[in-house]
Amino acid sequence: MERATEQFANNYFPELSATHYVATAAANAPFDELKKCCLFQLADEQRHLEMDRDVFERAGIPERDWLPAWEQPGTTCRFFRHVLELEDSIEILVKANFVAEGAAGPATFAVLADGAEARGDLLSAVNHRARVRDETRHISYARALVRALIEEDGANLGVIQRWQDESLHLFAEVAHGGRRREWWAGFLDSYYKIALPLGLRQTPITF
Ligand SMILES: [Fe+2]
Ligand SMILES: [Fe+2]
Image (tube, rainbow, N blue to C red; front, side, top):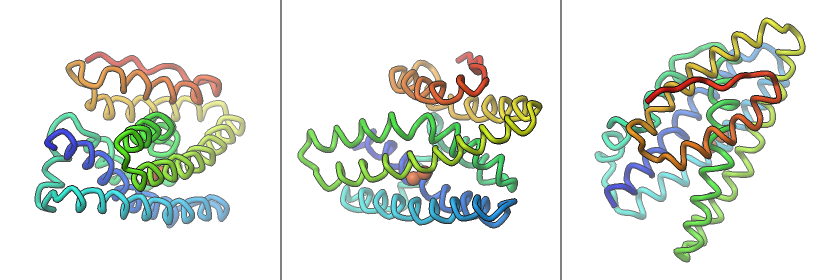
């Protein structure tokens, strides 16, 4: 249960954070189509957040323990707190949707869905699979955005590379000291599948 609490926190608080940062991205969106994408995503993230709240409650974990589980070292907290401080819509969407969801979306949630199914917890399995479908949408418009930015001006590639490097360095805390090595490899693998074809380079990370 101790380890599960950290996992639940790594699900719940990023979704809670997403409802805030994607609302900021919507409010500051430089054009209407982007605002619409952000608002659709806001509804998705709200649903994910409620689902993860329910998991915490069904597990009987008192609410006062949730945040400390996320604030301890080795979680996604540092990355999401950084995104919550941003105001520029494009920077938020590149860091959170393109890098973080592009990496975590397909890999992590499919594993959680399979695990839930294996335990006979069909409700959670259905929920996780719904989240995979939503994440795919969030990643798709971020990828279209990144592609358009690079096509519009090649110099944008350098800025996106810097945003990727900042994001992955903050995220790497989750794998510090050789923790979750297999998960981290899958995380980078999903991300580089979408990033390298667009001309981005791998971020050197030393633990
Ligand atoms: Fe989500
Ligand atoms: Fe999402």
